[in-house]
Image (cartoon, rainbow, N blue to C red):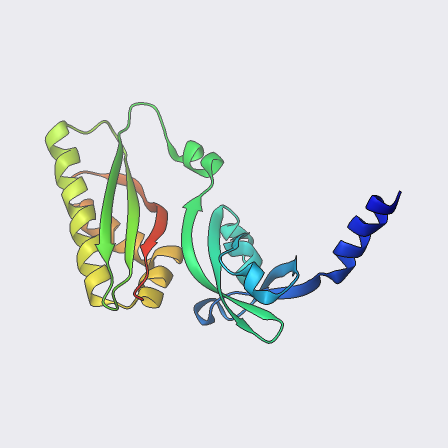
Length: 193
């Protein structure tokens, strides 16, 4: 019986900390987490959707990941750790008799962050291999040049709010008619020390 009460008391000793999104996302509250002290909560990963941050229901399929990197009183500060479009959404985009072109590349931002980015282009009709290769090159070029010219926060915003997808679409549609371009997934590989 005494062991059960000890466990309950252990819970009571924990404090609740508020997890806050980075400044880029308006420092919106992402949730709360229990921990004995704030340092125990460091490096925890939090998942949310863009809809939760912006209130725009049309962005419910964009999943964002944040990692706790610092403490400010009882607030836990986070950094963008990556994003992913929901599988259902991607499945809804893919059609028969059209091509799905994936392009994965590692990019470095102006301020030294390294990200792995996965671009996705969907054509109106089935494309030839040479056309797919050209479109893939365009995706790689735009992603790497844009990353090298912008800061981490700027690059993340361009990806998440669709500006980058739009720029890729405008360039790549000259090669072959496209239906949709998305940056399907990102992952932060390395942050400057």
